[in-house]
Structure formats: structure tokens, C-alpha cells
Image (cartoon, rainbow over all chains, first blue to last red; front, side, top):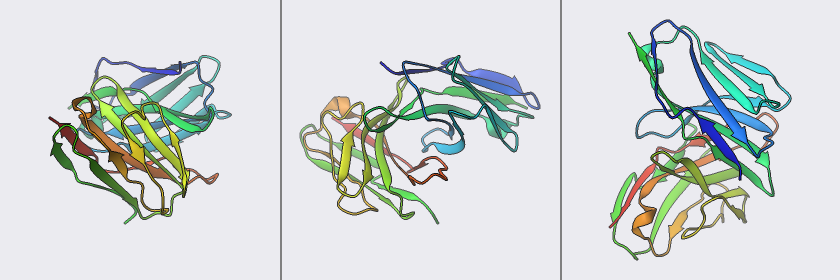
Length: 113
Length: 114
């Protein structure tokens, strides 16, 4: 079955450093890959989307890479700040008998001042 | 303000008592979806709808019903709730055009079934 894996262990980094989060998937050929931020008790907020034919996308301090051969996406936050502390979710979209989205369980990021 | 509105935010109910969680969006989005979120399992899709009168099952549809009679509304119905449906529920919507900017989520409904 389709599966997304994100590091379940929290990532702790120092303010100003680059945070790198990983999303691996199996048994899926996604048309899109998305990253979301979720704060405790709140709904996910969309950050970035990358298509299957794109290798890299940037938005301000955020960068996403997408390697369909490795079946992996990396999400980078440069010059991280304490306000970046949150859970980050990876999501895959594709047509598998209907347009379905599957989400990873997320990685919790803590940025220490 | 563009948003997805869910109601109620919190709900405690008893086993077997039918309930409806409402979801409404003001962005004229074609696509709407319901998810449940449980610790360690992430968001799991319950049902989705690609347009009015078009609904389809997600990964965990058992025990739930939906309807899409109007574009803006996508209610989630639990005909006979059970304790294993205690969870945090999210409604989401998106446009289905080429210029796609991801899903907009509601603030969530925390449901407890006792």
C-alpha cells in the first residue's frame, strides 16, 4: 500500500541554522508533493507545492526538492527562527482511481534561541 | 476573508447518537475533503468531493457519510458514532485549476464519543 514516512523524532536546531526535513514515500507515483505547517490544535497551513517534473522550488526562506527516482523530498528552512517551531507535514497527490491525497505523520521542529 | 469554516469546534457525544459536522468554504472551490487526525497516524482522508453531487471514499470511510448538494458545503455525518471515532477532524478545500496553491484547511473539530 501507499506509504509516506517522515522522521517521527523531533528535530532540534539552533536559531540561524538550516533545518532539513525528509519525506520518503513508497508504492506511489505522485503528481504533486506538498508541504504544510501545523501548530498544535490548529489546521495545517499550506507552504509549498512541487510538481513531479520539477526538481526544486523556493519561497523566501523555504526550499523543497523532489527526487522521483529516490522517492524523496527534502524541505529546508534557512536562517531558522523560534517562530518556525511547529510540525511539518508532507503530502502526496495523484490519480489512483480518483484524486487522493495522503499525508505523512509529520516531523516536529524545535528552533532554540 | 477566504476561509473554511467548521462547526462545532468541540463536541462530546454519546455512542450511537447521530451527529453532523458542518463545513463551508467561501472560495468557490470545486474540491472538498474530510480528514481525521490521530496521534502518530497523521491525517487520513475520509471522503472527498471533486464537485457538486460527486463524492468518493478516501482511506477510512467506514462509519461516515457525506453529501455535496451545494458547492460551498460539505457536511460530515456520523450516523451511529462509536468511541473509535474520537478524533480531531479537518475539512479542507482547493481549486482544481492548473494554478493550484494547495489545500485550505478549517480550524478543526475535536470530537469525543463516550
